[in-house]
Image (tube, rainbow, N blue to C red; front, side):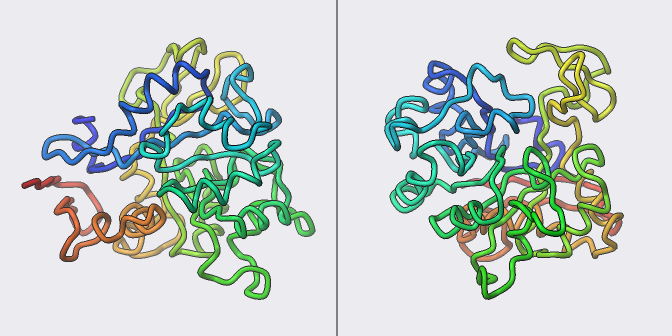
Length: 309
């Protein structure tokens, strides 16, 4: 993860999408091992995106890997491996999946792992119930969830819920992919303006960043790259992104007109707070890691410092 420093990224939650049992057992202890390094980006713990998701909203996730939680918490331990909680920063799942609603309190109350709603067909009431059970995040807002309408607001309705429905401090954080492909600029603006302090910019980026356009393998899948657009070959299904995080920041500024400092909070303060690590990450204050980016007045990345003693 050393190359990530070239783009100002000092810490990440490496994502593992829906996979078979042996894959999780092999990679979770590696990707999820929390690190503190002076010469590469740190892992804050792995993001387990699936496999307990809706087959209808699977996106590019392989359908053969998708499953349910019919055995409750044991289903997580069987698929991810015993002790996965020590490595998992985030688990993304669909509340409507069999057994999911029951495991949310157990997961979030007994470990530092965050439960995030995503790849779901949940309506507003079910999503709200998940929040009351302990869900504190939404994975890539707008994508892989029902469309927001005037009467059926869906998961998206959580970010602007009325105070009598959901207190403002209980509104979940929400990741949003501001690459100009996954979400229309006007939708990004609307989401940010609804709740700036809960907005987290994410890239959904794959290893294809910087590579030439063409066809590439992603496990058993073939991905077509055209600029920052990645599609499963032969389909119109988005298969990730090839956009740098700092470019998403620039997009947010362009689409909302907010100052640079406010935009930077979506990749520093907000994500650190969402993961309950604001005491050591994401802020310039005593006790936090001294990871610094130097930017020009227009937001151009000049240098990155990562200090470790």
